[in-house]
Every structure is written in structure tokens, then in C-alpha cells.
Amino acid sequence: MLSSRAIGELPAFLSLFDPGWWNRMLDSTTSGHYSPEAMILMASVFGFAFLCIAAGFLLKIRIGNKETGPSSWIVNPGEIRALLDTAQTQRSKVRVSFVRDDPGARSTDASILSADPGRGIDLEMTSLVRATPSWAGKLVVCDFRLRLDPRKDYQSFYNFVAPIITVRKASDAFVHMRVGWPTRLELEQKRGFLRVEPPRNLVLELALWHENTIKLAKGNFATPSTWGKPILRLDPGLPLPAVELRNISGGGLRLEVPAEPIQKHASLFEPSNRFLMQLLLAEPEAGQPVEFFLALRLQNAYGDPGISGTKGFGFHILSFGVPTSEETRENLSWKTAAAGVPALDDWAFRRHLAMYRSRGA
Image 1 (cartoon, one colour):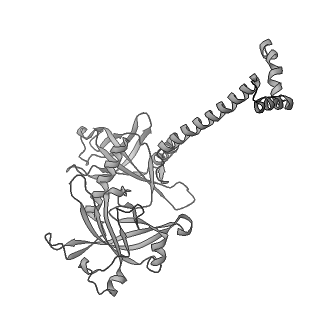
Image 2 (cartoon, rainbow, N blue to C red; image 1 turned 45 degrees about the horizontal axis):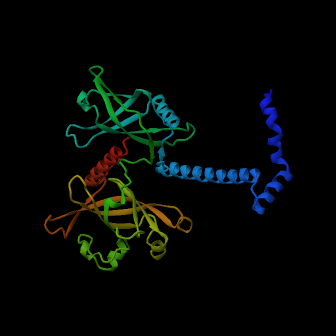
Image 3 (cartoon, one colour; image 1 turned 60 degrees about the horizontal axis):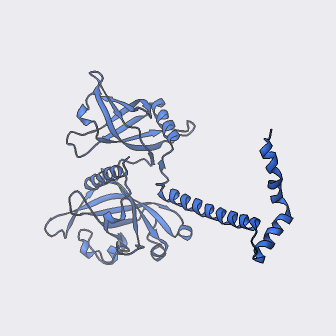
């Protein structure tokens, strides 16, 4: 029931819907005479406009500060909990990769005993793993896979990074290790190497040749100086370089190329075609860059340059070139990358840990 005060103010409120009331205020405003009604109208209009501008500004700041992240990131707490619960129910194996700068570190398989956001994730592994309580605080990368649809023979692959909380020997046969609750999971394709998205300032040089263009130039695959002009080159000095290195691992990489170079070399960017790459990456820990020579096979193409203006290309590393002389570095000896490129795999792992620590995750 309305109070007596509210009933008393009801006629004034209903007058707002009277066209005559609005006309009187408009006449007073345009005539230049003082009118309380006109002042109320003007104050209301300016006040409402100010509130809209302020709300839009705050919303822009909030959206701008929000970390969007790649589409492969899973950051919803409920979804993270559901996936980890499913991994425990399906008894999914968790591949635990310990910090590589520790000489006693190893990778091993574990199973999830329990998963709780308040406590963390309890993992059980064989006692053959030489883990000790001194490992507390170190970071581990955990990979696992799930079969989300029992009707399909298809598995999804996930990974996360978390600090070790405690390590204890449960029995003569098992070790129990508790790791922190992850702030996100990353959905990945099946791969044996850790993939990172390197910041642009760490990619110092990148040049890409098609093997046929080297053959036409009568170049020698063992001598990079004979390869001729690359079909793509990264120039960090340009605001819009001709190619971007979107992600990389010890076993492959993904490039993003604008539409114009694609149109110029459309016949070369076909699946299964082979390429050679020279790549120079910054190494903050060592204080000097590291150089890689890679033989690549084009695996996949992503996107439509007519819509997005760019197209992505996924490459598999077939082999890598090692200089026969560290002094001249003019000639290369090619080695198979069936097990990946160890130095590149280590670089990617260090970058992953550095970016993880910088986010404070």
C-alpha cells in the first residue's frame, strides 16, 4: 500500500506525462524567461548526459583492462572444475613436466586423487620419481586428455601450469603431490611439445623460403647465403610486418600472413609444400639471441584473407640445421626433428614460465 507522502507526490509525477506540461517548459526555455520548470528540465538533461558519458567511460576502462586471451583458454571457474572432475572420473593420466632448469627433474605420468578449488589438485605418481619436499614452490606443466563425448572416438587435450604445494611419500610405491588450482586451462591439439605465443619484441628476425625458389636460384640447402631472396621477411621496425609468428614449439609453428603476400605467392602456400626458415629469437636469460634454421612442411591453413585481411599457416618442423663451424656459421648440417628441436623446445618452455610468472598466475 502507498504511503500518504507517496500519494501526495503522485500528481506531480503524473504531470510528467502531460503534453501541456512539456510545452509550457519548452516555451519558457525558448523565451529566455526564468522558469523553475525549465531549470529542472535543463538540469535533468545535462545530468542524464553526464551519467551516460561517465558510465560509458567506466565501461570502456573495465573492458580495456580485461585480459581477453586466446580462444583456446578456458577461464570460467565452473568449466575448469567440471573438466578436472571429469579427468578424475575417467582416471585420465596427467603428464607432469617438471621445471627443466633443475637437473634432477623428470617428466612422469600421474593420476588425479582429488580436485578442489580450495585445496588444489592431489596427484599420485610412482615412487620412482625422485621428488622431495624441497620441490614446493616450483612450477609444473600438467597435460591431460578427455573423451567428452562417449559416442565419438575423439579426445580433447588440455594443459595448465601450477605451483607445487606439497610433496610426500605415501607408501613404498607411491608419491603424492599437491599442486595449486589453475586459473585457466588451455585447449590444445595433440602435440608432444609445449606451445607458446611469443611477444613480438622477442622475434628479432624471420625469413621464409620455399624450397622450389631455392632450387630455381641454384642454391645449396647447406649454405643459407645461396638461398636468395625470401618470399616472406619479418621487419620488426615496421608497424605492420609482412609476417607474424603467432605461436611456436619444439615441433612446429604458426605464422599469420597479410593478404597481399599471400596473393603474390598463392601457388606456394599449398598443403605439404616444403619451406626453409631462418629464425632469430631473443634470449633474455643469456643476454644474446639464439638462431635457428628450420626445414618445414605446411600442414594447415586457417582463415579467409578476404574477411580478416590475414591468413594463418601451421607448419611442422621436419629437420633443423646445425652450423658445422661455430666461427663462420656459413654451412649447415641437417638433423631430423622427429623428436623435435631440443634448443627450440627449451626456449619455448622458458618463455612459457616467464610469461606465467609475469601474469602472477
